[in-house]
Amino acid sequence: MKEIAGFVYDQMQRDNDCWVSAAIMIYNCMRGDNIDRTNRIIKNAPNFINGQMGSASDLLWKLGIKNYVYTTARFPTREQIGKYINKNKPFLCCVGADYSGRKPDIAYQGGHWVVIYGYEVSGGTLSQRVVNRVRVADPDPNVGRVTIAYDEAVYGSNYWENTSYMS
Image (cartoon, rainbow, N blue to C red):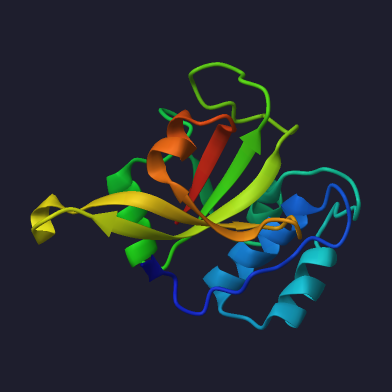
């Protein structure tokens, strides 16, 4: 199992605050700050309204964390996951219950924000190893940190509406 070293989980405190917790986890990971200070920074951000659905991606941009949505696929490839996690860069994902089409829906706001922060590999020789499971930090207190099979994430009943990588 490969996980981003020192990744700190944040649990949402009220309904519709998954985007806040996802932004807190990403900001803390990218800036290496302590979680209490990160909480204050996020909640003092421009246009922040606690308890209302918002965009974790937009909030991170306002705080200087550059992130870009994959425009060709809703979920990163196995290779992309390995590449970015090995560089200690998490993925920000918006998961929906409604299938909105084959291409990423960049404007999708009706979903649930989560963070990919690790992976597991399988295979024989080093060159044959592939990412087969991903570690996801879900701000929902009933879920928490989970491991999901890569194929389940791509083809399962939840629909990954968009995924952003950090630069």
